[in-house]
Every structure is written in structure tokens, then in C-alpha cells.
Amino acid sequence: MSGIRNVAAAAVLLASIALTGCAGSSGGSSIDPVGSWGDTSDTTEPSLTLADDGSLTGTDGCNRLSGSWRLEDDDLVYFDAVASTRMACEGFDTWLEGLSQATISGSTMTITGADGAEIGTLERSSSEE
Image: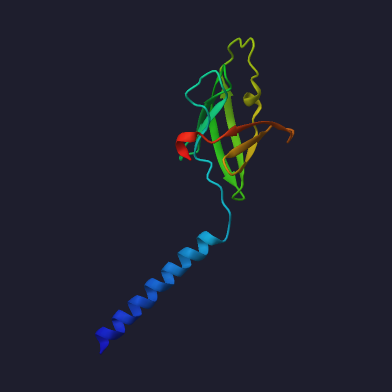
């Protein structure tokens, strides 16, 4: 009889753990910014790659960018300590070097500058959809 109770107790414990995991994941609409944004194969176009470890690399179409990123409130991406090379970029709109934060809706990342104004958008890389 104690064997049946142990099996029943284990089943209840496993069900509780499973339900706790489901409850934790259904509460928010957290975005997943990890991956490539823009056409990373074309170095003359703006793009970003956000890695799992919080680092970022990219290009504004002329200069290379590197730094870090973090997700806050499950829906806002903040960019920190972003540095860029300073090559002469005639004919390039280097808007991406002014990035401060971003929001993601579907497969579009909307990037804002330090003043909160939108400076541009990047689409999630088609190879990651």
C-alpha cells in the first residue's frame, strides 16, 4: 500500500511542477530579441545581431558597432556601451549609430534614439523566422 501512496505522491508532485512551469510562461508576452535584425549579409545596410550573452554586433552600413543589450519589462530592449568605428561614410545614412532602445512587434524592431524619437526599423533576418 505504501508503494501506491509513493507513486500517487510523486504524480501529484510532478503535476504541480508542470502546472507551475505553465503558469510562469503564460503570464507575459515576453519578446525574444536574440538573433539577427536587418540583412547581415549586406555590410552596406544597417543590421544588428543580438547574442544570448547580452552582446551585440552590427553595422550602420559603413561603421561597425559593438556593445551590449538587455531586456527590461519583457518588452523593451536597451542598448548599452555601444561603440562604433569612425570611418568616413559619404553617401551613407548612419542612423543606427544613434540607437538607445528598441521595441519589437512581430518581426519588426523599432529603434529609438536617446531622446525617445524613432530613428529607424530593422526586420528580423529571414533565415530566423
